Picture 1 (cartoon, rainbow, N blue to C red):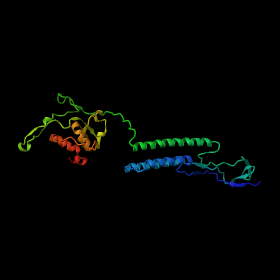
Picture 2: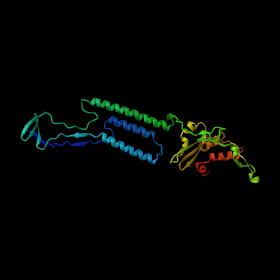
Picture 3: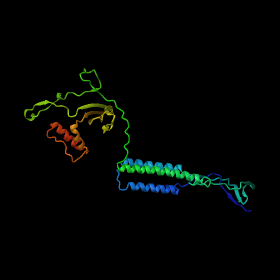
Picture 4: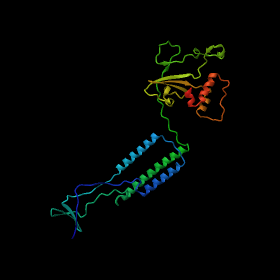
Length: 317
């Protein structure tokens, strides 16, 4: 009986198995290709603008996810070894380990090496692994079809409207009670009578006379004062202002941006100005004529022109 002497090192070796990007199983691979084809077909001819910072964040997230997947799927192979002066002799009867001229019988089978686990596994648990793989593939297919349906609905305008979050009313300044003595209430606001202000009369260029002002074009609804180091913009998007009643009626907000905070003044927009407001923001039927301003007072006509102007003209005013 002639054997084969195979000296092996004693230190175990860790070998990193190569990791593929696409699934190993043919069914998973086919599902991945099919879902990708459907998604590309749905997005064919579509154009989307993405901000550069969001694109960078998305790329970084993809890289981190890929790195985590690669680390999680690393397979380590350990090779059982012996000292240099020990050798295995493989014979038809089994394995004989020789150490310093002394032979010791070992089990009939040589030491097995762990191989990279296959998707099908060995013959004993192959059917179980195949069933688990198909179950995961079906779950992936269902989630992919839901995502594709969401893309179609969004492109066709059938996307479900998400439920709005509940409005948390923000505390605001109270209105000063009518007829109350000055100093009896603090941290309040009030609107003085409009006729306290003198404006130019109809014949001012000739007689240089001023007359009491008429009613306010935009009646006051309230005000707020926020202390902040920043100067926030688009505060009208915060529906908590005015104790959650900001959007009960169309409101014109004046944002006084101060070095130490912001002062907000809220004014109701009367119904007669709503068509001009909507047309100035591109809403409504553009072919429908606007109400005539020929019979309006000069102040009303000036406000209509202001509402019809674009953002640059408003900023200039």
